[in-house]
Every structure is written in C-alpha cells, then in structure tokens.
Image (cartoon, rainbow, N blue to C red; front, side, top):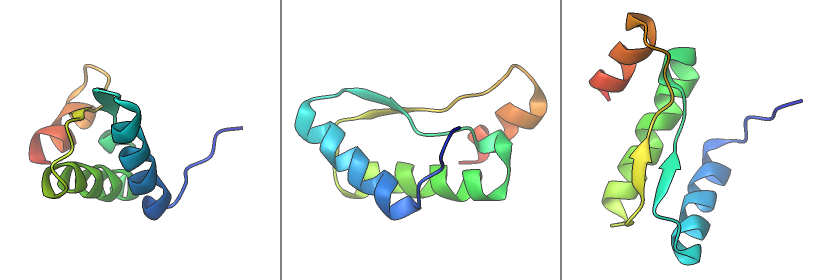
Length: 73
C-alpha cells in the first residue's frame, strides 16, 4: 500500500533529489484535501526558499476540484 511520509521527510527527499541532479518533481495532488494542500505549499516554498533548481509539478485530473487548489498555491 502507499505511504504518505511526514512533510519533514518530503523536504529531505527534495534536497536529495537536488543533489542527484533531478530537474523536475511532482510535489503532490492538492485536490486530495487539506493536508495535501499544506504539503504542496510547503514543498513549493522550500524549493523557492532554498533556491533548488527543481521544477515543481502537481498532479490533477481535469476537473475544477483538482485544478483550483493548484491555482491558489
């Protein structure tokens, strides 16, 4: 089954991805609910604050409920 690690682990993974030279990452599905929105916002902020060169992408279906949270972030 899938796991959803705590935000601290996700941030650590972002930095490891940067060290490996990974250029893009799907940082979440904000349409999945409040915790997903908070995590995606925190990951996007970490990418900006730390000056990481990772391009952030978000998962979404082509429905308003998935796209609107991404637009707000």
